[in-house]
Length: 430
Image (cartoon, rainbow, N blue to C red; front, top):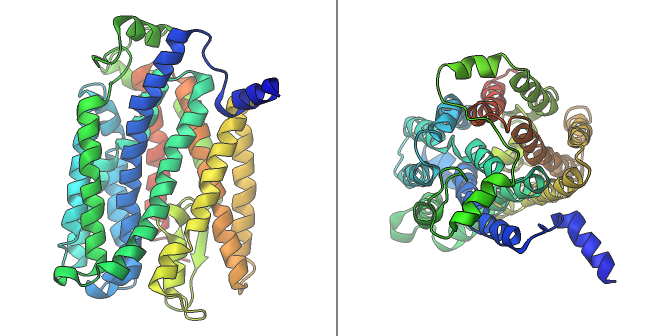
């Protein structure tokens, strides 16, 4: 029985390091690196998801938002997020991550609270644009940092846990908004959706403080006191050796003259974008989903429920029911991460994603009208699309371990292409 549990543990979490010193080091990396990037990404996605939760909980009417205003606001966020991807990720080589990450967290958290004071949609355009710029370092920056600390066999599961933090935030945002709407709506003259922005913004402050005090930067640059000199040397030596590279003009040649950026951008784009879908709503209007991931990040299921006339959903149900797709996303992330770390066959995850995306797209597009249960199934199934985050970005990290600056650009370019397409797709005519 002991052998069975040991083997099961090794499959689910990987084989433990062979020495006590490395086990202790890995525990510290998980505690200080993984915990912070997960908390940061949780607050990041909480501040993204709350816009849709606010929209279906009274903001649309309060700001007199018209047909395409919600899509336009999301697009302004995506534009800021996209154009800042590469600059923000390269800044990690100039500004210490222990400063840049928490500083950006404070900026977007403060902008989230400012959103509560918006009186028209133009205010939302400006706020969300700069919020997108501040959030640009979070996802790809965290993947870069994890790729700097973890071995290939450790990276997949940690990447999945990191990505799952965003899904937990999506669930929490809906539950939080439903609770706020029930308990705080009208308190001190503020609508419930305004309290959501204030509370979500305040959540970022202690997370930023934790980053300022405890985040260790990278193995080569860390000065964290909880690492001994021997542990710092071990953190470097346990990863493959790499030549010293610089952030200078040769980076252009190093990136564009190699195949890696083209391959990884093509894999990421083709897996999630070439099967993009337009999702029709009832007569109240349309939502364009540039990718099935946007069903979660843009809360498309909640927007469909908001527009639904038969059946008619309450505000609480609109905030609760989409959590089913998020649960599927978490299960897909963790399950595929265990598989890829065990087999090293990351391409198989993309095959699974493509199959599930195709089924979901066909149900939503071809079988129309379909039953409410059929729509729920299709929306929930789309959560599998999130599985590609951990596997594909872990893949890119492994491919470019020999050049930190190139690795930064590749990770940012993958996410940049994804979001650029998503911004365009929201306005694609159906």
